[in-house]
Image (cartoon, rainbow over all chains, first blue to last red; front, side, top):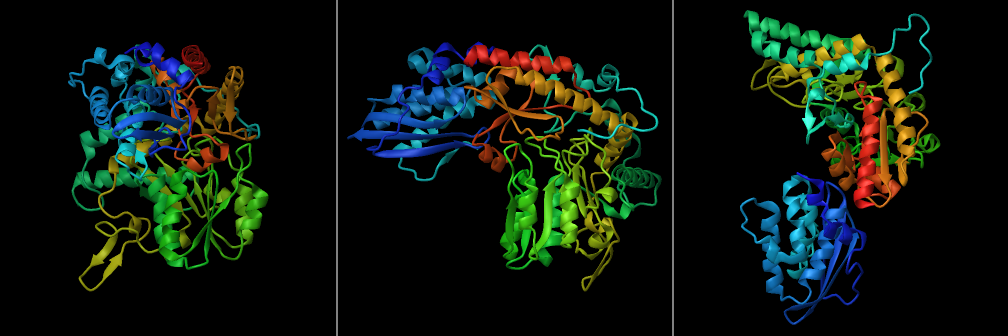
Length: 148
Length: 417
């Protein structure tokens, strides 16, 4: 295990300068995520155009992994269909939680930077929180998402 | 903590290196680096002799207690009750009838909440706690308030992390049925000057429970001198096993309280019409107890007393001062909780770096600290932070380990700052 495998340059950059870090007053749906263990909290906003995610943003506070993961998420799902985004959630979840996921990390682009989290079990929930929250927003869940 | 200088025979300071050799875990490596264990407020480590006491019991003397006429049962009973006597002496209870074995501080507080408070509470009655409490000294009272219609009142804390005594004086009143306070704050290390609070409660005729989980490993506790009514503590924070702890209760109060769980060992006679409960303290110890845990805890008491709680307190105070100065020298670091009297706990935040990241980076350096809300979410809320990083020291820690903590924080700053 190497710290630089967890805190890769992409992650450090997205933690320092999170993208799409703003509220969205005209969001079609939003959801809240909460990680009670470390106190990470985020709200994810989505604006849809038909079945396409036209805009996505987030706000909140958390560790470097959770902030960078949410920031990378916003970049990667913008322009995708809801169905496609849900499929990506499945892929990310598998990459983060399973050793035998068979996910082609290279095909994930920047999101592949999160593959190092797998070796740090205590941090997996930090990386997956935003994805669960996106899933909840797209499915119009009103209860906050908890990773515990 | 500051204490009066010992008058008569001042023993030499503790030999930390010799002490460290008694703790097998301190010799191990974590991620290729020597373990630097600074999470003692969550749970301490154990010396070999405590581990040996538990093993020896299982190897030679295990049987159920208070039951058989055979030799092993008698030996197990003698060891178990012998441990109770050590625990009595440890906090200077008047009688071993006042020493109830429980799973830990949490169970002790729940026992008092359900067995002492619940039958006495009605709508409008009040339980008075403080803002500093661990969740274990909040939630059991919320539950009993829900069950009885009583109300939970909370004494505010100050910016330095102390319980506001003047506010306490204005909150305690004729509806107050019980005061429950931390002796030492787990999140911040504040040593609460409980004598003042107890004296004030006495004036109102209100009994006082102290959560001593963080206090007993660090300072001498004398329940008679404190004049408290209940004192709760855990074995695993004072070099003993997990799953064992003690409820000290004033005998007159314990005698009036109904049992809290029913079963074997807590009875004298059972028929379907009527059960006669056992005497104190067994009335509160239903089922086969954690015999090995009690024996191990007794061995931990022997060990701590041999070192001397006064010398332990002095060594930890010295470490606290060194750590406070060293950490204050880290750019962007802010210590959370600055009460004048503290146990060896330093809670802090580091500008621009989340505590969870600090915890992971330090772990890779072999340094174990706690990060998060420390089961004291109201304290975090008070300071407007979701979490802090917390280093907590024991007498077996060294200045060199404090230096490793500081070095690790600089690594975190280089990486994420």
